[in-house]
Image 1 (cartoon, helix red, strand yellow):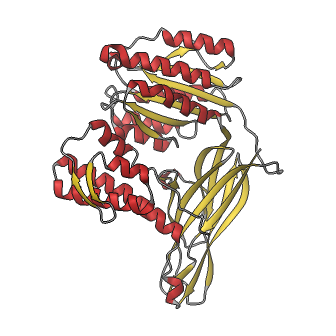
Image 2 (cartoon, rainbow, N blue to C red; image 1 turned 180 degrees about the vertical axis):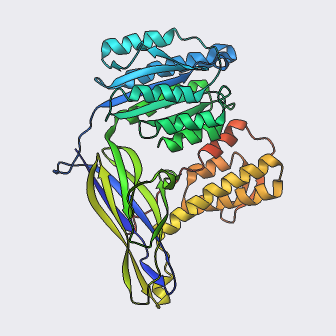
Image 3 (spheres, rainbow, N blue to C red; image 1 turned 135 degrees about the vertical axis):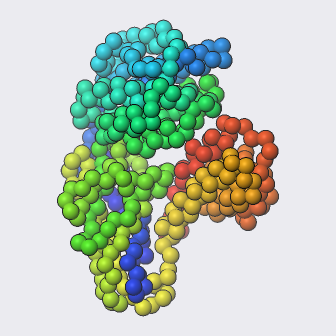
Length: 428
């Protein structure tokens, strides 16, 4: 059983004339036995591996590692989980089973690993067709907790950008997808687009031998999901506008465009599948009609929709005051995640400037990124930045660009720039 709660962190006091309310909402899932709890349902796991000709490079090292990693992932799939393995070239084809989904047991896992061992690398890359195949398979078990692991080592050369966008749109709401790029010849923007729309993650696997651990980790995490469909339902009063809803921990993800209207005042924002013990943070900004000093107004009502059941959760308030001590107080959670968003922007702008040969701008932006990462305790990002810049003083953001940077290190910094650290609430 899994129970859900939500807690709001905000400064509810606004100065006279202000019309913008910011709040951070922490949504927590925890094991419980209450009547409102939820139990894990049917599950589908789809592994999609690139078997194009480029996977044969390095003397076949990449395709051999992909085969071994897929076999390890198969061993991680729980009994009774429905699963399939798809090969990707200029189209998609079934590796196992021959059609539809198999039910995991000792025999099925053995057959699947044998089928994967026979895979050969050849052909092109058409990621949209791979996603369409995954959507077809996920549709075989409507209502299941469906997850796809997608691996590619190259760019989407056999489809136009519009085709990939259309295929991604077809998959929204059907399954979640964790996308991984092997090596350095894939396109971060393509896989980020896939993962963002399908509520998953994107990352680099620098070396073929790293695939084994990543595949087993991702599959084990998918097996741990207990609830397949959670949404944040946001009600705002008449005359108000929701400016954005963003996930800010464990990573930055703008959910605003994914919102669907329930009625003129209410929209749902999908949060995807959840494990039985998990916390995520969301930043909400609402613009409301201006009140007079002393007025108090409900700026938003937050509900959680868990497997189509609505649960009241939390309130966001606004109180207008002429007391500057109250209205200028910065909420710690909002300030922290605003800084994390600035950090991601600084990295993106710094890397873009570095790519274009604008050294001074790259130095300033990446220096600011080091400073922000240091201030927030984001040690993982500091380490990634240190592979791109020499850090003279982290506190002030004084850095020098490195001349020789491994492409994989630069891509890792780019793709992981949206990972955040949670605000430290131990002092509360």
